Amino acid sequence: MTVLARAEHNPADDVYQAAVAAAHQKLVDAVVDTRHVRSPVSESWRRCLKLHDSPERVIAPSTISTTLLAEHRKTHPITAVLPMLETLLAPAHDVGLITAISNTDGHLLWVDGAHQMRAQAETIGFIPGSDWSEESMGTSAPGAALSTGTPAQVAGAEHFSHHVHEFYCSAVPLRHPSGRVLGMLDLTGSATAVTPLALAMLSNTAQVIEQYWSTHTFPHAHYQPPVATPNTVLIEVATGHTARLGTLRLSNRHAEILTLLDWHRSGLSATQLAHQLFGDVTPDELTARLTTVRAEMSRLRKLLSHSGLPITVESQPYRLQSSITTDASAAMRALHRGDLTTALQVAPADLLPGSDAPGVVELRNHFAATLREAILADATADQLWSYLGRHQAANDVESWMLALKILPANSPRRAIVTATLQRLTS
Image (cartoon, rainbow, N blue to C red; front, side, top):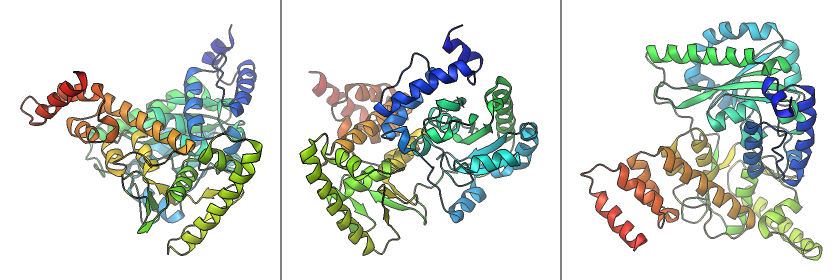
């Protein structure tokens, strides 16, 4: 039996786990070895390498405040079915597992179950209010389920972060009657959490909940997690205008630094930040670049201290508080939960179009490609029309052809589409 065949039968298999552990070591060099790793895991690893420099840097999840956690719990539709969930998942608690429920952004709203396993999970930050999306903690069952909208199992060394390799988890998305993902349901603990029975329990529980929702007046039918709340500071870097932090205008360099720190939530060292801003440099050049980085960080901290906003940049490594986010990151989270309208509204333009910092260019291209794929796959006519007004779509023949296909026959926009296609294909 091949290693992958063993994994399909049991992802906690010792031989398979040894092969995955060996493959995981290569992630430090940004190499994804797919020969001995299940494809859903290797695909998640690829996504995570675009979000994190290295698995070694992913140590603990970001968290939201207790006030914001309470607000999410109060307003989230899952609140109406909590008693049902507790009953359906009680057998998992009896065998030593814990259960978790998250919102669409990956924030765990409730964690319940076996006391001993909960205590162990707390050591890796698996607690209410923590963010277990791929953007925060890399590959895990909750993060993969939210990113793909499909059930996921992640076993031991398959986790992106080294600190999670002792845990096993299965997760399934929970969907609104319209099909929109509203959150995630998870089982975490020992290898029992990745058995077919565990995944079947989650899937059956989700089906019961979704069936209940479809036959009752749905609470908070138009619920959408807020992109920015009174507790969140939004950094505008994808509006097409000068980057702003509230009413504060940001220099291009400060906007680049804040964007990079927001995307790499576990933090960046001075050297890593220098490479993100200036690319590959010689050892002699690096010394000068590090001096520049530290000087810019000093200026940025001084600027923030006089901004009137509750913002600080932590050190060793440089990192932002969890209550700060860029509009680009908020839009990416909206894309991950299938909310194209919010993504287009929150980030109406390219990410820092005037920046040539390598790290920013990579993020800009990643967001643009993700948005385009989502548009081509799922956009309504209005969403597509909004997208076609963006700079990146100006010469995109495939997107304009899609508009010709989905616009109503009597739409006055068809004349614009036809003229644009004639220009692009002549």
